[in-house]
Length: 232
Image (cartoon, rainbow, N blue to C red; front, side):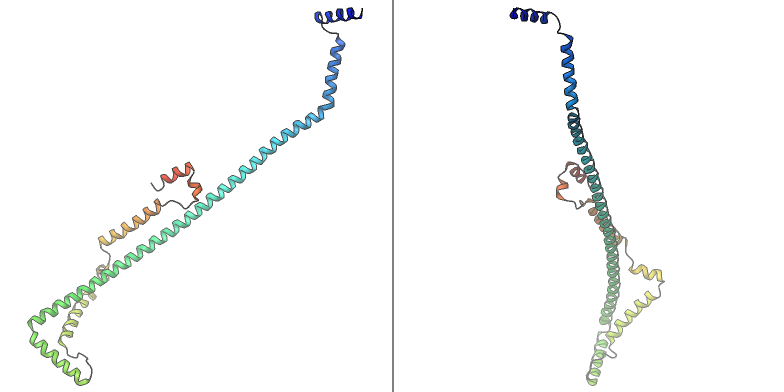
């Protein structure tokens, strides 16, 4: 009988839904389980969300620190480049002044050479035309020096000729206006062009020179692209 009862009841359970109290019991059990583990589940969920939020906050702080370091490095780089530029401009200015001074010294030496050359030509001309008289006067001057115990070259005709020629050229220069005197030793167009060419080359070399940065930075593609077109 018992076997028949279970058979009939089992067959009915396949044909019809179970009793409502079964569903109530299952729903009640689920609600009980949810109530028992709600706080623990919420803690786990909140802990997971907090870990994700903490990671985002740490990433944000790290990104902010990175941007601060990047800005500081850029400012340092720009400051160094500004100092290099100021140093470069000062060096170029000094080089221009030195080259101009050297050119003026060359012009002064050339002017003195012209005076010496003129004195030499005048001396050669007088020697060719008045050689016997000059030799006689020079001999007398030498005898006078021997008599005095020292050579003073007093009344030496050669020295008088040289000094006369020098005085004539100096007098011509002194009679010029200040502007004309300045023009005698001022830089010529060729000298100015040479100084400008040297300064232009120094400028181009400075612009083409790569900035002094760490070698590891030069390995980055964007840095390589910037350096490839640097100074162009």
